[in-house]
Length: 152
Image (cartoon, rainbow, N blue to C red; front, side):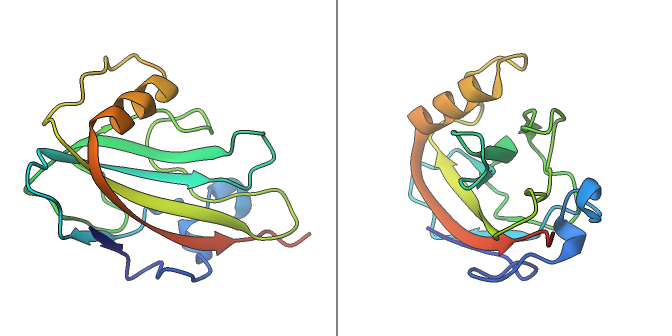
């Protein structure tokens, strides 16, 4: 599979508009496009993760599942046709970068091809349970990484 974004090219620095409001951003979710999904992909999921967050376990910025198999792109700032889980900020949907001041953090955007149309996880499940179930049903994935920093 391949994943790309016109707004956030792989290896780029994420623009402020895509950052969390508490860091001066507008929390706009980026456009994403994917291709070359394997046969048997019944739906997709999109995640964004910061492995550099000082939590010992990173920081989840976005978990969207049950994106229909016919959808292979998301437009910037548009609510995806998906179920979205609570991110580590505590709200559902996309939460942009907002690391503590210091070195840039990496943000890993991933699309997962999933073998079921509807991920078998209850709407009130924790985001950890959703991610666990997602990985159990993922048949392929593609990622890219970009960075963001807050000067301080």
